[in-house]
Image 1 (tube, rainbow, N blue to C red):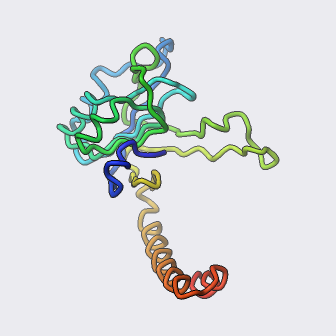
Image 2: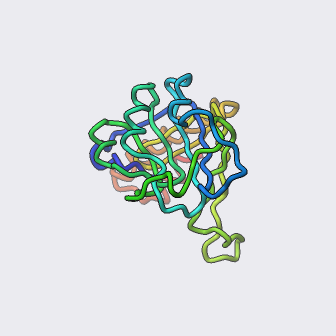
Image 3: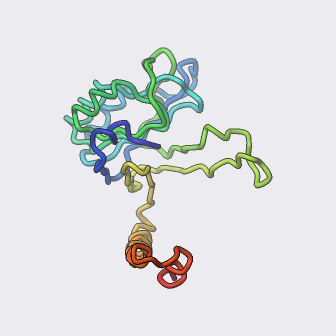
Length: 203
């Protein structure tokens, strides 16, 4: 995923617990319907990062400038969209972090609608749908389940979801990797071949 605001704010970073939203096709008449707008429903979750999943291969936006304005008022830290957004300039001008698969000129309501709020959701790779297996030229990336309260970390490189139960281990591994890479960088800048730097510093 990428942030449409990264060109204006390359240092954009987001960290916070997940508040999840599941979107379904507008034609789905059996899925539940929330009693209030999905952004308004996050009022009780300041400091959270909203994570929205849309139907696979949906081409319309599920987030726009009005959503950003409300989310900022409610003190949400950003939004991650397993789908598309629109009104890119409004997000950039607001300084609100929006991470999405892409953008669209089409609005949400004719195509998708919110269904369930703050429930486990699954994010899959839509580009390789139906092409699973090691023998495939395009093996499917593993799906990621996002549960309410999972830690969301996002910057211009992408988005990572960390369950709280493993957060301490992830932090330790990340700090170890950073220290090793800093040593590798020093050696590589001093002329050491990459393979040798890795062998020397990575354990």
